[in-house]
Image (cartoon, rainbow, N blue to C red):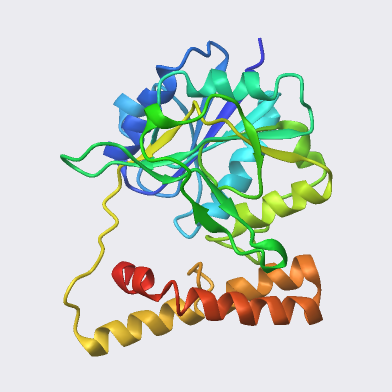
Length: 285
């Protein structure tokens, strides 16, 4: 029997995190779930490889290229739904079945999980429930509507945007859209994908009683030397591999709004990101 759901996990030499992600998926109540690991790093150890379909790609494949490769593999399996996630995220119990049930009779819907974070020795707390596009700015502002999993609402509801993890969508969506490897090699390709889907009439539904938990150390910097920090900030401001760069923000808005409107919304969004959002950027640099 063909798998109903194919989970796609990009990875690069993060075996411990990947193993936890895979085990959390195997613990879900989904007998027809196939796990595709798109691996841009070293070969997986046998303890992980026996549980998944490992699809090897060159080490210069970033998130978007890995997802694109995974979509091809999943469609080859005949999967009805695709589940995007990352190696550093684990699924809360029952999440996959709740995502599937939320869109079972809604063919033009995409089911989304809230994202939690848990650092060593601390409880699970909400990273974001969803993201707001702030109208024409297409911003992707993180929204936190509660704090702990037990505080989450019961019923699904429509949202603007979400991240690229813990998201379940019909495979047929990719007969009409694609992830944009050329313009968004690592960041913003999920943002771009949701905007493409919305133009086709798809709705993004947040399913609050689900959840992914990110356990990666974000390595927020403290006490960095001024020269080193300036170089890091300049790289984030200009690189196509940084989400807050002019390059990525402009490409997204030009694609979806055209050059004139896109320029003005990029200017405003870039200003907001590098003023209000600057403390967070500094911590991550």
